[in-house]
Each structure stands twice: as structure tokens, then as C-alpha cells.
Length: 115
Image (cartoon, rainbow, N blue to C red; front, side, top):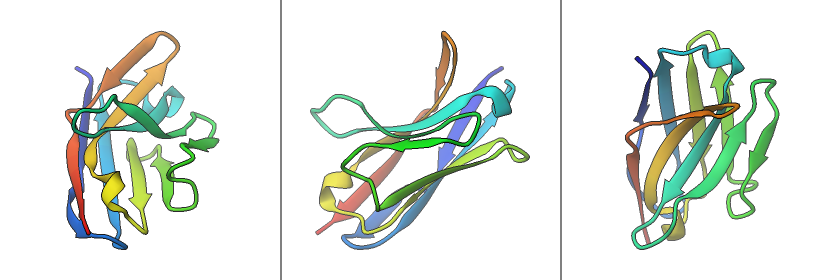
């Protein structure tokens, strides 16, 4: 059974930091591309960052220089280090695993940034 379990969300003041974690199980983690998405109220879900199976990374322009995605294949876990948080980063953050046409989502973790 595939599971993606996010943790680390919470309430933080603008300028603060949070580290999200996504623990994966039920599939071969090392071959999957792992991503973080977010969805703010009334908005579409958007891609935040991706780390490929080979370790390459990509970021949305809005988070470049502030967020860092990383993976630990030994722990089947992907992380999102978020620094210099802004109120506009407030959203539910979702972990995603993707391999060719297969994809799976976590349940999401709320991040709220107060001004």
C-alpha cells in the first residue's frame, strides 16, 4: 500500500522557517521523482519544487532562493526547507511521487505564515 505522510507544517511569522518532511512507503522510493505542491484557498494547486530520482532539482520562480528540496533515499523521505517565509506562502502543502504514468499524493500539511 502506497503511503505519503507529510509533517512539519504549522504557524510561523513572516521571515521564519519551517521544514516539511514526507515519509514514503509502499513503492521504490529511489526511482520516483518527488515533488512538493501547494494549494492556497481559492487557488489551483501549484508545483513548488521537484527533486528527480537522479537528484536534480527544479523550483517555482516564487520560491527560488528561499526553499530547498532534498531527498534521503535511505529513509525514503523527501524534505522541503522553507526559509524567509512570506504570507503568500500560506497554503496546504502536498507531497507527490511520480514515476512515468504513476503518481501518488499525500494528505497535505497546513503552512500558515502570519504578517
